[in-house]
Amino acid sequence: MKQKIVLATSNKGKVKEMADVLADFGFEVVAQSELGIESPEETGLTFVENALLKARYASEKSGLPAIADDSGLVVKALNNAPGLYSARYAGVDDEDPGFHNRKKLLAEMANVPKNEREAKFVSCIVMLQTPTDPSPIIAEGECYGEITFEEKGENGFGYDSLFFSPEKNCTFAELEPTEKKQISHRANALKILKQKLKVA
Image 1: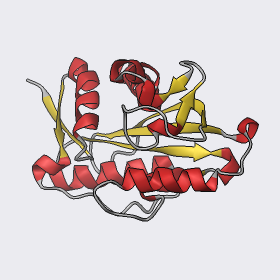
Image 2 (image 1 turned 180 degrees about the horizontal axis):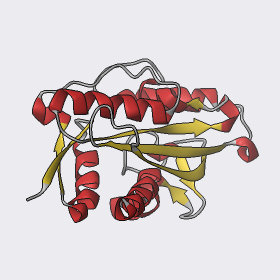
Image 3 (image 1 turned 90 degrees about the vertical axis):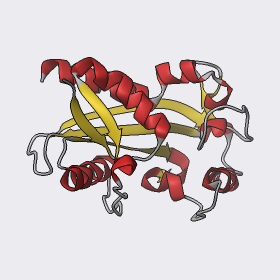
């Protein structure tokens, strides 16, 4: 019988991505939203702190082991912004915050030359057995690219249409979802999680 694990998100895409990996290790993933659990306030100063905070809260409220992911875009020329605030960079909470976030990023980067537009996506995944688990499994993944001068591509979400991957010679939004899943920051973090679970 599979052990249930709560995922600290209501994002269906994340649930599926995590479920595919964790199924191999005997876990059945359930989203916290399915259990009526809301997200806590993210008060951490790093991706790791926020992921831990979300996982602890979900585990405490559900009584189950928990897994959480915190991720974002880090742009060197903007002093590592939007960083932890990637999802709410423009401070707009409507049906399409991604549109406003991309618009703000383009405006902030307007005068930054091509050779100074490097950026990276970061994903930190944390897994806890209990809310007080003293040795959480932590897996971090990154992928590197640069910020474009305009949006390109129709796929993806968030900043994907502005994130150019030198490896693929196109933006993340120009990739098919299956291609993006192979090279994304979350994919890299999930690979590390998988390795750590094999050892655990």
